[in-house]
View 1 (spheres, helix red, strand yellow):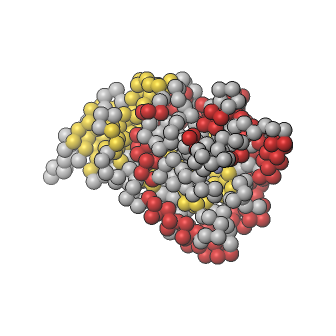
View 2 (cartoon, protein in one colour):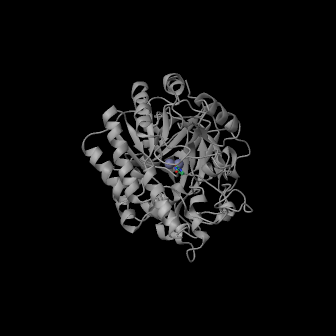
View 3 (cartoon, protein in one colour):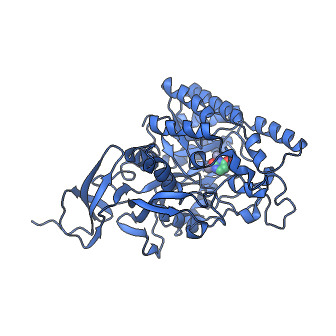
Length: 474
Ligand code: DUC
Ligand code: ZN
Ligand code: ZN
């Protein structure tokens, strides 16, 4: 009996996994990987990958799309432009957030984000929830039911007036997560410390974007990181400390990991490619608003600490925290709003990055010899798949897995420019950055969804994924 002809064969490339790399051909049928061998027979479609790397499609586990802002500010990306940008940057899966507004039922929030995403996505996706109103109904009924339906992770905030949970609420939410086997993502910055610093800076007339970095101090981040870890230890629940900005919170995470706690950590491109000095703009002007995110970028010492942490396992995940706003509107809804460009406290916190995440880590990390190729794959695809309950369907080039594959040219050099990107934002914080290594083709379940020659595919074919539970260890 002869085996059926594969739908697709990718020949001559180097396959990279989280553990090793090797030269092989790869065959795909029915959207799944069916063969990996030195030589496989001809496919209906053939791709020559000579000189290219075959990486598991990038999984960006921290992306904000179409997210409602309390003050009415509109995000620069919905699910359409955000996922087009994702595939152009070598990603095949994103995990955006379904945000519960205070007073809103969690189930209603999840349904609303499904309605926004339906039929709009160029890559696969799955939602984390954001819990801002842990009522008895949410904790007792909605959250347990949603976790069982495959919404197995959610984020909580330790700051922001319209999202912050107090310590009692955090503990209650952590308790439900432990009971249901869900994973909690924590935005760890101390609310009162930020408010205190903001007030003092304002009184001193220090309102330029740069002072955002002082208001959101590394001390407030360190304190909240320790508090979140202590609460998690008390309740015995695994947590992910997301968007870790530098040395101080890292020391708390290292302390927790040494004690054997189930604490995971994520960092992002802004903490290796930017520093707080970028928030100064040209001369302490409003250009600095292009770099306002929370936590803010720190200094060169923290960048060095982060590289060490990416190598030594302090960090498990490297995500974009893509949270795009229009610079044109920075600091107020619409450029005609009287609040616009008056003070850092009105600037929405977040920067775009879903398309530039992989190239920045590859270029600054792999091309410059700071991390191995295998570590790059672990941080950007395999670990997010494992931690968020999608492995081995996603995040690995193994037989039976979804054929989500990024063809990567490790030699390709380019300069990051806003005009080349596919996101909805009107700027990139990485304008002018020199990059070595670029995704030249993105394949989602066997179909090309982006190629250098053809651009982004015509139709959105992304599907929604219900996820399994997270492991307590990676
Ligand atoms: N937290 C995020 O995760 N993203 C952007 C802003 C924020 O505070
Ligand atoms: Zn956050
Ligand atoms: Zn975020």
